[in-house]
Amino acid sequence: MKRTIAVLTAAALTAAPTAAFASSATLRLVLRIPVHCTLDVVGGTVLEDRLVLQVYRNCNTGHQVVLSGLDSNEFGDVSVSYNGELETVAGDQVLMDQSERYYDQTDDVVIKAANASSADMYRLAGSLQLSVVVA
Figure (cartoon, rainbow, N blue to C red):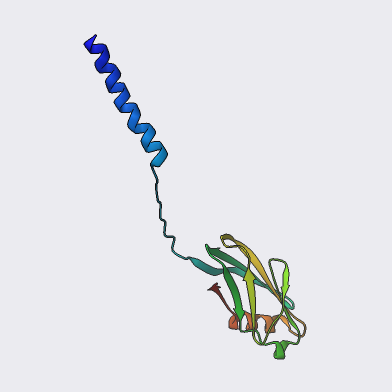
């Protein structure tokens, strides 16, 4: 009989704290993820009056892609298409807002100049700068 009482008492003691902890336990978890955003030109080609660049982008936060070094005065109308969206050239640069906060893939940037030859497009390719700005 003493043994049965001891077993029941031990079971009651182990069950009681579990119920109390379940109703009042809290856990706070804090994570710090560093901001990371890179952009690399991994390929490109000139097709008559168009320059097509393959751009790899890896970001984990909101950002803008900046394409600078465009001289629209020399080549007439210059248009830039990025991910299928036509962007307007302001001065010598284009700012492209990216709605995706997390991004990891390669895209095409197509630059078309109305009054440019293939040689002009190669020269333009040498003067371009692509970068990312974290928002």
